[in-house]
Amino acid sequence: MFNRKNKQPKLDPLQQKRLDEKEKEESRRGQILKERIYPLLLEDNEAIANTKIFLQAFEVALNQSFMRKRVDIMVSNLGLEEELKNNPEAGRYRKMFGILNLETVECASDLLRAMSQIIDNSLHDENKERKMSELKLKYFHGN
Image 1 (cartoon, helix red, strand yellow):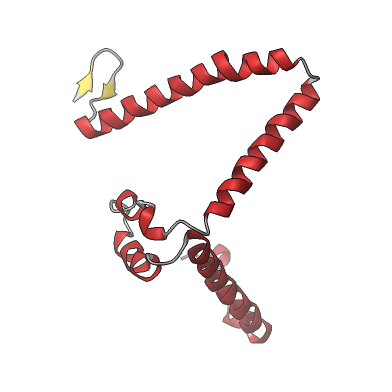
Image 2 (image 1 turned 120 degrees about the horizontal axis):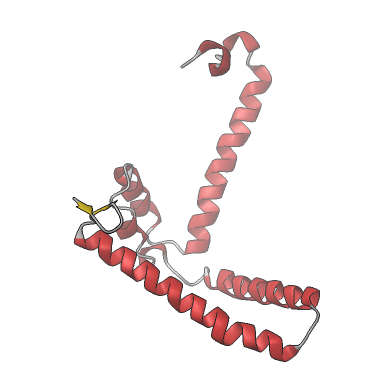
């Protein structure tokens, strides 16, 4: 059960594989930072403030470009259902995937935000009429 070397519980093979992959990826990213990006920034010899602005601007450009791609990518192509299959609420997720699988990521995201907004608006309207005596404050009343 425990590895005597570091007193950590022994992981099953799948968990160990994921941990190894994570460590390998972290190492790869560290190498990119140290051996490629940092030397490039040194080569540019810009002020630190300008370098930070450049990094932020590049990240924003990457994210904006990716966000534009959301229009073309279908929810079914994300593989998210497989990732969430072990989630305690997997059944709820599966039902939602059944509704949104054929939508683009952008459309699905818009629909989910819209539903959340509809709930918020309804609660806001309901609370205009609701009396304080109808509200059970868990802070004062427990569960």
